[in-house]
Length: 133
Image 1 (cartoon, rainbow, N blue to C red):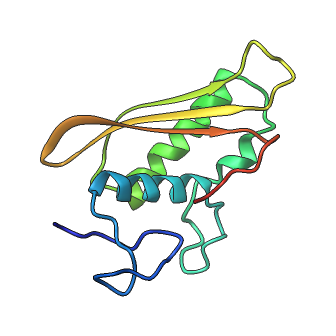
Image 2: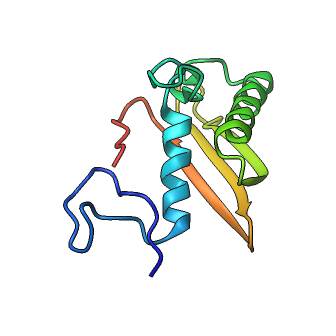
């Protein structure tokens, strides 16, 4: 079994100091979630890290805004997760409910040595707490 990074939240492991990810796809999902939800300036070791998706929640549901979000996600992934091959980024809003501030995100990607497409989905709803773990 190949081990990757520690699982979050940190927990004592049986075979290592901490529980570890044993699947690269789970590890990448964690990295994507961190990158997308971290606001620029929040990571003190690299103030440029992070998309800060929450800052877009109350923006108008316009194609230009969704394109801006997708471009920022692409730029951040190219910088911080360059081993991912991004095939598509979809930003969706609940257009059936004009008073809704919900946003959904789908990233279709692949990783080297694995031709299988992977999908990362994230739904943001300001009416509920976004659970990070």
